[in-house]
Image (cartoon, rainbow, N blue to C red; front, side, top):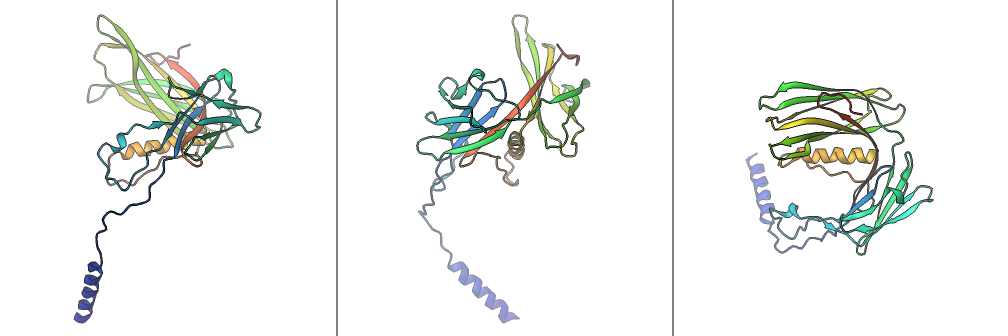
Amino acid sequence: MKNRIVGVLIMLIGIVSCIDDVDNLNLPRIEPKLVVQSFITPNDSIRVAVWQSIPINYNLPITGNYYDDKPVEVKNALVVLKNSEDTQTVEIPFVEALGMYVIPPTAYDVVMGNTYHLSVSAPGFNEVKASTTVPDYAPIIRDVKLDTLGLTQWGDVRIILSGRIVDEASKPNFYALFQYSFAHYVNGIDTVSYVRFSIRELYSDLGYDGISIPFKIDYSVWDDGHHNNLNISLYALSVDKHYYRFHKSLDNVWDIGDNPFAESSHLYSNVEGGLGVFASFISTVIDLDDKGEQRK
């Protein structure tokens, strides 16, 4: 037994002695890719942001501000949008003032239920493509209720906005709710209107096919006596699967934060040959006053 242990130790020492540090090893360089982001909806301008990715250079040390680099806009791309029937095709020009490719709603019709294909090409990059099918119905929201539950332990006013989403049966559906709280700040001289609080929630009809999906948005706002006329706008969106999956993955990345023990989480992308997301949605807006009554 003793001889066996000695033999194993000799083998380990031999293996360790064969390991040397390698200096000046040049790893393959990762080429940047096109990054595309666009969310389309009927009766709205079409905006397409195009950047180039910032790949990690494994031959250089990662500095503390590596991820603070601003994305590099690609201004000389050919951005083409067309429908599945190939009866409506448009080249989208770059608008310098907005830093993206934009056309007004009068230049192209986005229709509920139709599928659209986006292609982007630029010198020095591979062409990228993506597709989205616009949801075929606007979300229906019922029983919207606003409750004020007093003060939190930090002195904030706790508010719950609740209701239900009426789901369409027999197919997978995805939804997003954006809640914006608006207020006026009065300091005796000026009155300033601003967005005081906003939040986004995502929902799918998994387990709720054809029945109502309940929602409850629980948040709090600070009240120091100078803020008044709190109004709320609820933007209810029917979204395609790409919109839902991208924002779900974005939430996962934010949840990880700087936790060194968390597993890595990659952003969802439906862009072939590149990175990013091309998705679509249909929206409905519900405006409430500070008492929870729907404003006309």
